[in-house]
Length: 434
Image (tube, rainbow, N blue to C red; front, side, top):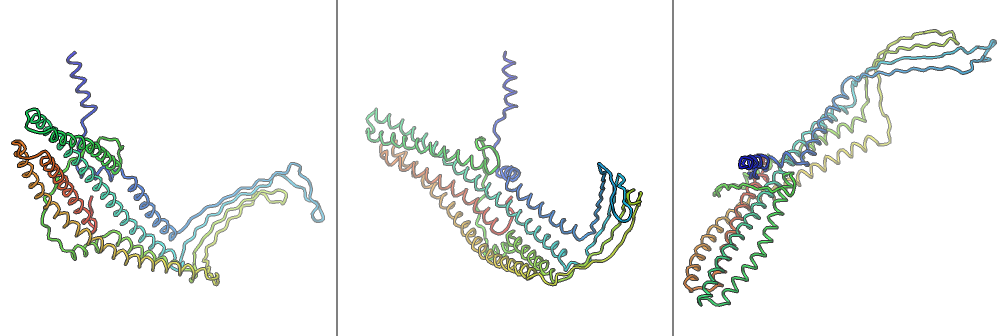
């Protein structure tokens, strides 16, 4: 019986292992692998690559084959009164044949070459957009991860605070029983315990919501009991120069590179649109094989074979402004892309500046938070000693504990926001954050 229980426990441990705590790096890896948005982005990138192949194929020789077969059989053959003597219809009548053709563009007014170049530049633009999509997804995971940390930390601190209040309530009850405290002191702590229990319910709910948000970012079920393992880097006095950061952003941001390639693609499309002003020349060759069987016309298995090669030219001499309209549209699209590029540069400059200031402010908050927590801990220690000797009231004790809870919460939040601010600055200057 004991052996059976032991085996069952071992199997349970194997089949149902304890939840592993995920590090930030593991969360990034899981979330990026499961992201449906990135799968769509990858599909768009592959489709753009095939567009390059499409235009490349149009510049190469095209070989085509066509074939046909016709069979005719009259139900009631008769004579046709054509000419001096009637012609008697003889069944059957059938023909078959094939045609093999080859065509090679010689000159298309630069349409194919510029269209291919535009497709290549568009592919490069989408490639940088894909990298930006990965960075944005990584930032979503970072934000969800640190939000879960904050919610978990707040829930944990509330539980510790409630446990401390219960200890104080028990101590105050002993004081009350021995005539060392008033009923008012006891009731005040009891009310604070009740209020904290209500707040703890909200904190637990916020914790579960934050965990569900992280699960969604990771692409796993919302009710998965995900646990995270957090580590902090030491907060350092980083000597960052705003101009250096801005220069890095202007050189590295994926959006700028993407728009730059879109401008180039637009200029290629202008050239393609202007191809309508030029003639188009093609070289072609054809081979025919034709066979007919028509006894009525004294044709019996007559086989015809021929081939020819030549050049063809087509030129739109007048198309009611079609070419000029297409060219003007393409030029306007280039103008829009150039203006969007300059607008994006202004936005990036502001974004880098905000991220730069945010990092410094979050660092200052961590410094202030550490001092506030140390002060709150010392204040609680002194107040608790006084309370033990009836030299402080229950209000003093409650205020000291609330002050410490608030200081610990703010410090934990400041640490998380500092880590997130570092990531956002890296993102703002165009670095990969995954």
